[in-house]
Amino acid sequence: MNKIIAIVGMCGSGKSIASEYLEKELGYQKVYFGGVIYEKMKEENIEITPESQKIYRENLRKKYGMGAVAEILLPKIKELSKENNVVLDGLYSWDELKILKKEFPNLNTISIVVDKKIRYDRLKIRPDRPFNNQESRDRDISEIENIAKAGPIAYADYYIFNNGTIEEYITRLNEILKQI
Image 1 (cartoon, helix red, strand yellow):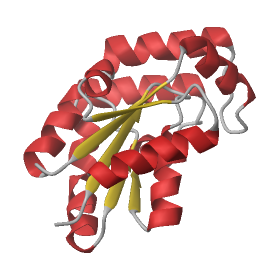
Image 2: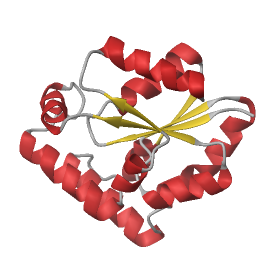
Image 3: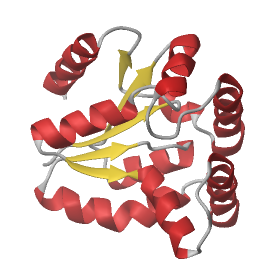
Image 4: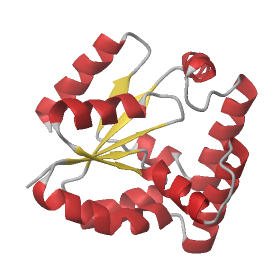
C-alpha cells in the first residue's frame, strides 16, 4: 500500500520544506490544501490577498463544513494514491483529519513545530507572502479559533522541532520516514 503523509503546522513552520523534499527528492505526489483556496478564488475572480484568503477560507468552511477542503480533494488523493506515495501539504482542520483518517487508515501525520518568535521572524523574510508580527499573530489566532487547526498539530503521529538548521530538519524528517 502506498504511503500518505500529511504535513501539519502553523503558518511559517516549514510545512512546504517537508512537502517539497518528499515531492522532489523522494517522488511523492503533492496535494497542496491551500491551492484549493487559490483555485476557488481565481474561479470567482477574487483578488488574492492575506485578508481575502482568510475570509474565503473561513466562509468556505462555514458554508460546507470544517472538512470542506478534504472533501474537495478526496477524489484527487484517492486517484494519486493508487499508484504513488502522496504528501498532503497543509491539512488544516480536525474535521479534515477525521475525513482522511476514515478514508485512509494508513495516513500518517507529521507536525512541524517552531518557537513562535523564530517562526514570526521567518515569516517576515519569506519571499512568498511575507507577514509582519501582527499579521502573523492575527493569522495564528484566526486559524486556531475559526478553522480548528490546532487539533491535527496536537494529535500528529510524529513531530519535527524546526528551530535549527535545514540539515537538522531534513535529518529528523528522514528518521521519521524510516519509521513510516
